[in-house]
Length: 116
Image (cartoon, rainbow, N blue to C red; front, side, top):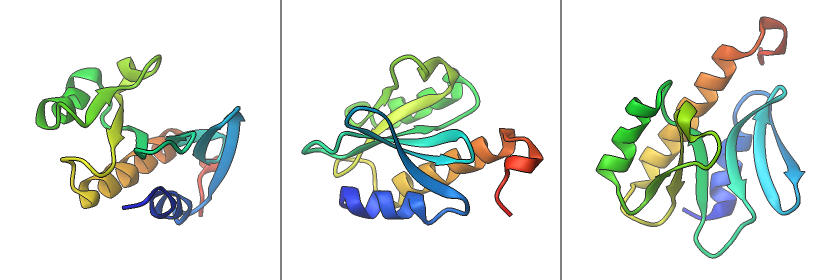
């Protein structure tokens, strides 16, 4: 999967939009909240997503894919991981993780901010 395909998948979600809140870093939001961190587009694409409601549950990704999943800096304690594309994690599982992150974030939005 290419970075462009990953971005397209993220932007295909209802209400999703791309933002660059920090120089060189691309994120995808739903309403005012980020559900996918896509970084600056380096050689090896990756995506930062909310993998679980707790750090302990999100650690299952790291146990399964120690070379391709890592705790995200700063927000990892809240269940966010970085998943490397093109490694041991199957593309389908990465796309499912993006979908799950989107669902987690949407579920926490006020009803007025949720996509229809």
